[in-house]
Length: 158
Image 1 (tube, rainbow, N blue to C red):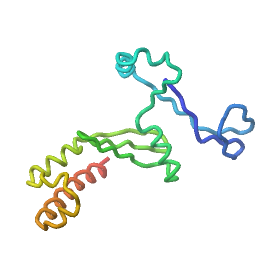
Image 2 (image 1 turned 135 degrees about the vertical axis):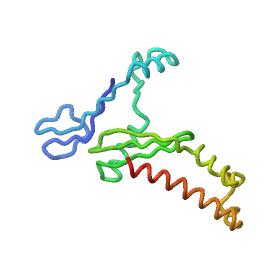
Image 3 (image 1 turned 60 degrees about the horizontal axis):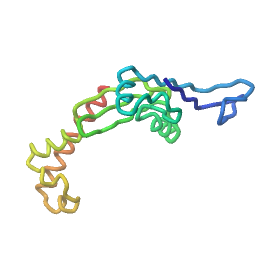
Image 4 (image 1 turned 30 degrees about the horizontal axis):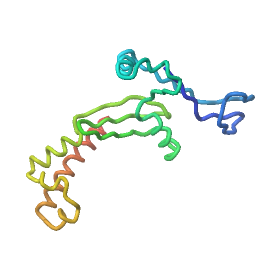
């Protein structure tokens, strides 16, 4: 288990550290728990990772969420990951993880849609090549729109 502190305010003024501060202190404390199965997986590959003080294990989206929260100036948003085999939506409410969902709509699904529509040869083609062939352009656009519609419907449901 590890922890992380951010959003530190002392008497309404933002501070970088909470240690040594006096007054009315407000901060967020994040506690990240590592389950036994994940810890055993790390340990089987790297030895006892908790013995190394310089090793800090955090979820892949941990710092991304902090960056987005500061950049967007929003506490509530959904972070979408599209991997080769699935899509994952990480829901963030009030600056904290509130849940996540996954669906089998990764890049492999889009590539399969290209195959099903007979345009797989355009998968790695440059935009200009596709643009120069009106039929191919139409099929590629239809395929991508279908994929995007499926993804948007899923996100809307969640």
